Image 1 (cartoon, rainbow, N blue to C red):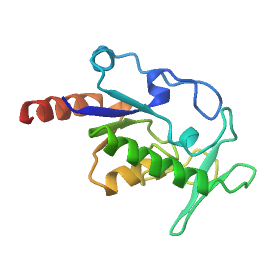
Image 2 (tube, one colour):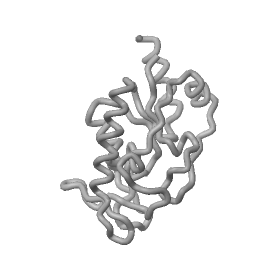
Image 3 (cartoon, rainbow, N blue to C red):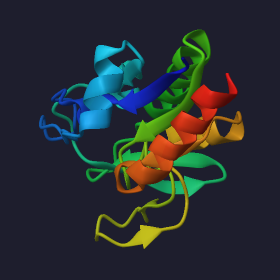
Length: 158
């Protein structure tokens, strides 16, 4: 059975920028965790950022620039965390990822626009984008049914 990369905050780790979690209490996730299929990861802490930390948003994508609300450049930490996340996904042969929606690292479909105003743009976070570019499907917590179907089909094919 293939493993699933999961944002650590969704598994209950208090690694969000504000020191809290985004625990996703779901029986299938619990089962996968008990089966040893979950690879828990926080790209931002992997990249060396502390918890808690100032909120950050992607300012530009080409070239990539991620800053905090105080205008501190945290791009190197986000890039390092994205590379480490991809390395873990490859090392553990993860077939897909479940990552936190709208996060500047983990958002799979949309992220905040860089104005710190709550506006969204259709673009992935830094780590999710790295996974997607390398052929690893990324789902968010609002796509659990799709993720479960994907994993079940992947298990049947194996």
